[in-house]
Image 1 (cartoon, rainbow, N blue to C red):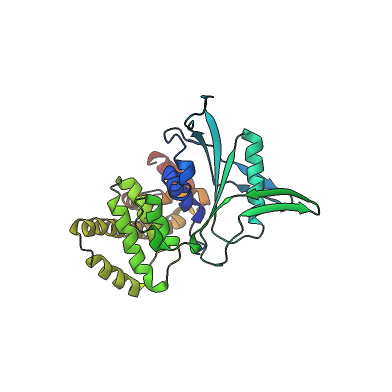
Image 2 (cartoon, rainbow, N blue to C red):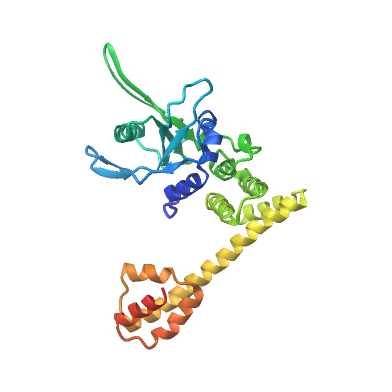
Length: 314
């Protein structure tokens, strides 16, 4: 996987937005027993590994309210914690870390914890462990289990008929032959188009697919053929709308990048080296704001002039 992609953030955004749909897809027996309107995304949890000497953030921790089962007495709300961890790289002893996360959450909340790990790396293909065991002769001390979702072990065709936004996105990271990449991208977009979601959610899903199925030139040609072969005209139009939005975003990002490059050159000459904080503020400006700053910067003589301009135009 490319080091320039924030894989954890992409998966956290996808699953955080479509959390119930994620459970529907992979944990249906849990999904049917929760109050879908009563989810609580808990604050970021951190785990400090004293042995390894590092501090890690847990990816997604959600409190769910379990519904009372038929014929069970009413005992008030029954809560549980879902701990979902994403792994974009294979890691030795990951199952041990999953147990440590479980233990910390269970100790803190004193509620059942449902641990889930989603593995998104392409290699290795071997099946990852889903247990952590502690044993001594004569005594099995501990066997901890978690739900393993290993995308490179799943065939995208098995999820093609699912009317589920998470399936539509995650097909892009499943087991795909090189020659199928263009076809899978089209099928992902067709699945997204049929869900009839709002533009913001469509953007999350289609952006995920485009990131992980970034096609080369020959694949783009095949992609265009696949789109042209879609029989339902409404589906074809919806897919083309998504593709058009990608093109518009790409043009806008290219224009902003060029405008930022030009204004940075002028600012360096007028006020000197820019620190990381200033550069971050510049990157948040629109193309029209950068063009305006480019003209104003010709009159700057010190860093305070730039900071003052940014304060006025934030």
